[in-house]
Amino acid sequence: MVKLVVTDKDGRDVEVDARAGLSIMENIRQLPRSVEAICGGLCSCATCHVFIEHDWMQRLPPRRYEERVMLSSSRNFDTARSRLSCQIKVTAELEGLRVTVAPGEP
Ligand code: FES
Image (tube, rainbow, N blue to C red; front, side, top):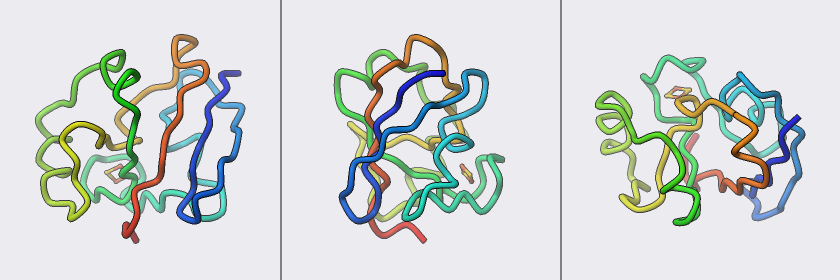
């Protein structure tokens, strides 16, 4: 298990024991007030939008073209912090990662 800290839509921090090999979205969508992820991880909805702290952003794989396109259509897109949580696989290297569910996403 990999410990993640998720700040939900109400601003509450929730610790999650995430399963490596699954995406961040798959590990956090069951939380109340979390991402909705209506496309199920197909990179076609942007309802799994999260913000990630600067230090962690540099340690993640870069956004692929499809992710950049989807994020650019989000009204809360932040170039420095936005990611689609379905596009990031949880690995042991992400121990302690903090993610914030983007406000205003459905
Ligand atoms: S779940 Fe739809 S883009 Fe991530």
